[in-house]
Image (cartoon, rainbow, N blue to C red):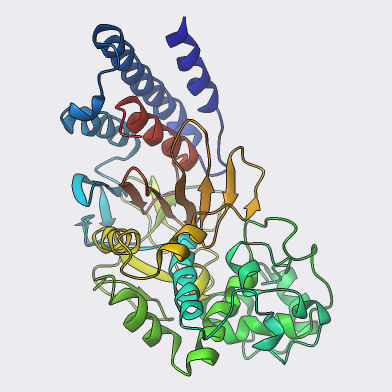
Length: 429
């Protein structure tokens, strides 16, 4: 009876859907998840019954990698766009598997050196940068934004702090125009070097996007009181760092954040930049949506990348491109104390702003889950165009994983919950 209760609890949790799940693959995907979870729980129940409190840590790593293979081979098609999945335990790589094509037109396959847009997971680099500057006494996290941006006249900037940016609680509205109607309204209130909204979205820099704050006369809520998923306050991180350090943002981040972590591939994309290692992003073809610049020969996939998707080049909030290999170097360096102090690491995974998801709050630069059944977890679960990113770390258990994908037709929350349950069933957590 105890086993049935646990199985039903997890299966009910798996019923949650995200807005970008593809109906044509959903049933097959979710059925695979239920089967994997049930098998893992049955194995745990059987071993617990036969061996008392014997720990699963003596199990071979294949006991975890096999269900991961089953899960991801069901989600990602090797003949379409796909993903790279990696797991580290005690600073050792225990799982690495690539699925599908990085570039369907040229036939280049995904590997651990393929570059993906990090979407909102880019914020962790911004958070560590600001924490590092705070440790150097160049800023204080409770400094008001008016200290760095005197051109913003509204008095509420005296009460919005750097900490509010990191914790997604500034209350600043996101007024970046996303369609022609919003663009026409934007031009009645702001000057722009661009004549068209499409150009603004493709080529607009952080400085261009900052203009909205000059004329802003209200906020959505009192700073620090609530969580907002798409906090435009992160737009201000790059210019803030430039004003504090006197250096170009890209260069400062490369020398002070990426290089100390051993990241050789990571960079902030600028308009027009492209390297052969960069993946293209895709979505399932939808005849009701504007067609992308590329459509696969079988008609299933179309490009949904920079140029087709809403893809603002605001660097500090979602502008990083990185390989999976480099991101695992980042996690190792970060949680081994090579970038910031232990107290700053604790601040990153300390809940600051509650969300509407059970057990989940926002820390500094990422989400934090404090589910009593698991160790505390710091994670990201984001998308940008067709790029979909899931990554998480349990610092106390010394386990990290990532799923970097160039398609958006899979349920990120369901996959995250399944990964957690696989590790839990094997007593890794």
